[in-house]
Image (cartoon, rainbow, N blue to C red):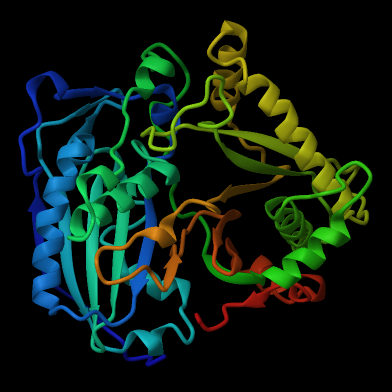
Length: 435
């Protein structure tokens, strides 16, 4: 890729809903899960090859259709007040147009995570995610006619599933070949199912905000389908005879990450691996896929260590910990609507999110199976879907792409050791060209 690539902002403007939000919808209450979400902008990028329409026509059409889409996703055009409500006064979403001084094919030869940040309209760790625009979109126009649409959506009001619903709704509204019956609209109401909490007299901070403490770097690791299958076979056991793709890859990443940290420090610490869980299909009765907001729980698996003694890490054991964790968590979530005790247990998990310096903490979220690759704005489906440099240490994001792409953020020293692991490299390629 051309190292002289530049991203130049051409225009910034505010897009308001094309129809005013009715007065009875002006105060949108946040749910408990919204309140507990970290204050960041969730990033996503969709890359499209050459388009037939002119760049001016595309941008004008996207801006117009965004306004129409915001009438359905009206909270995204509002502003959060006090970590309790969104004031839906149609303040609008930010729409940015930029030009990129290289071709898309050249960029995709080696797409560095730090460069990908330039295609996003907001910094991921910006505190504006809790006070400013809840949605920002940046349309990046490459010299060849290719395009990348960058999304920055506040995690305080949307999880990955909601982002997927929004993107596909906007794509269907934009695509003139789609009919109204094909447009999937959001369903709101999470605050009534997961009531918000009053933290005014509580020690729990009103919002979780991350800041940069260390120099962290993000790397992309690609596991193709055949290597995933081989890894699943390797980690299978009598306890978990058919491990999932996510279980197998997560176990390998956890093992290699702990080994890298141990190699750097000379001693092994206990470690915790947290897995996010989309609750929509796990609660009883289940919620529809288009149910909007943060509807995400998590479970944690722990690898104990005594007195810093370095012990071999068994992949099969880690997979067993994952399976036990999700099964125990699933049993709780099934009764969340019918049991005050179960709901209190879920809330207590979030309220006790304190981390210890004596424990290595890893957090993984899987966006596999979300239909990001189905978003067709009228010029075909994306060639590639990615995130960018996340900046938060020991965060793992998994995405589908002819296998699975794992995006991992670590401090520089640990990353150098991690990506030299022969066991990791037996199954994963480090940032290969996008094909």
